[in-house]
Length: 59
Image (tube, rainbow, N blue to C red; front, side):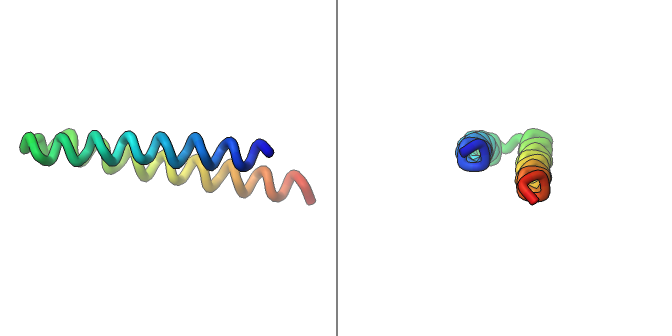
């Protein structure tokens, strides 16, 4: 069950960051768009590493 919770948190956080990135792009703030894109990739990396750790822990 923790894997499902981790995925839901990761998806919701990524969706919020993506929405914020699109709002920043509409306002023309290039720096925030780049920073939010990096933040999205960090969230994706952390979620995949946690899922990998959770999978190997079960073995």
